[in-house]
Image 1 (spheres, rainbow, N blue to C red):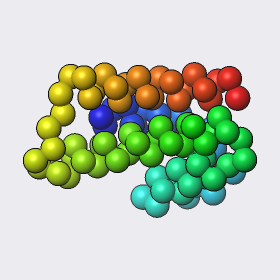
Image 2: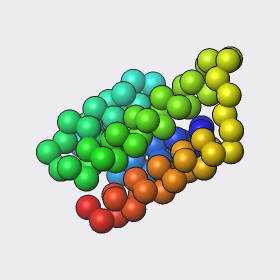
Image 3: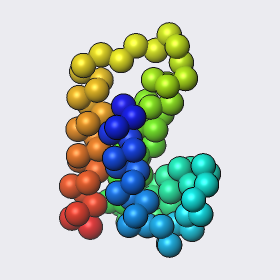
Length: 91
């Protein structure tokens, strides 16, 4: 989960650092998701939703000790990240 999330996050952070007002703080994660999901561009909204879903899964995996990750969930996270990049490249 974490690799898929951070891989996508870092790509998006590099691309939208200035316009999303990212400041190198932990709040940048929420700020980037908000920038994307509230954007007028439907493709960026899709990317933002994928990033949000990945962040939620990563947080569950990292902080919810009863949360179990199986191979199918890991593959789904990877596919969400890949799809988000494909959408981004097309925009």
